Length: 413
Image (cartoon, rainbow, N blue to C red):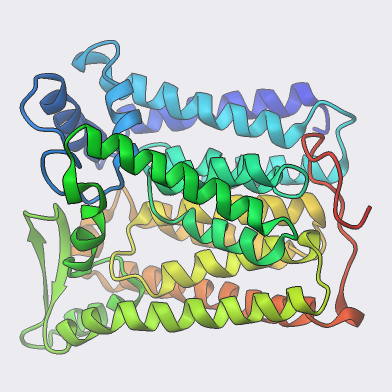
């Protein structure tokens, strides 16, 4: 189980199973890919409408790249091409994790954990745009210590596909001594993407995803939505779940929902600021990149998940990159969040895609599963806050190793 052949065999089997589930399992796991992404790609290919260019879009502009690329073999092969593309990206990140030198125990643990996480998470691990960003995030974090400019480029590209890797860029800026290089690369690359979009005729639509996200309601899977889901279970008048045809998702309605939606953004801002302050405190007190980057990245990601009014099941994929980095640095210290992340993946898979209808019907068992998931995310956030506080205490610090051969050296060297 410890050799490269076993790991790559595991990788192939896991991805073959996920591909089969996406193509044949009940619940239409590839619903967004086949019904939405394909429509957007065909509209652009036929010259009808370019999302993010001709009209505002819910995603950053680079999200269109994998959607368009998956049309390479025609509409009839679009789902298979999408799944192949994500698998290739995962394979690249997996190769970076394993490295080219002697395969250490820590990298083996991180690799097997990732494969277990993918199995527990199920089809959604490949079947959404978030799946494209995960390999960029994993590679960026693994290369962060020795190659911060390359890491910044990968994470910035990921952020222009789906916003969440921007939190990892922020973490890198906080912890790295070469933060000026990170900022320069991120700003320059972002500026280049914006300029190209403007030349293509986007105008302000290039940043339209900000307003599009701000206008969303409270999605049924949002952590804060659990409060109203239990009211639906109890039969409280005026509380319900309805489909929004503009956003193409199920949202909660009822007394107090609008207030909660309005508060999510400021609450998220305050929570992110608190994480930033913990990270800055630890960095100023001498915590190294190896000590700080993994828990800081994980805490950022979990805060974004908890304070989010969307809460889509694919958000669980965000946990993979920081946990993989933490396990590759020191498995013992990251055992608790790694196990908790598995629980998040498993509870996500229970609800989506096979029995999603039971959640929409507010079945008590499935609302309980969602409640458990939220509780586990809170536990990860608490672990992360504690780890960041300890990282700022020299006596509580720990030495870290480079996670893969791609990391040439650590700042402790």
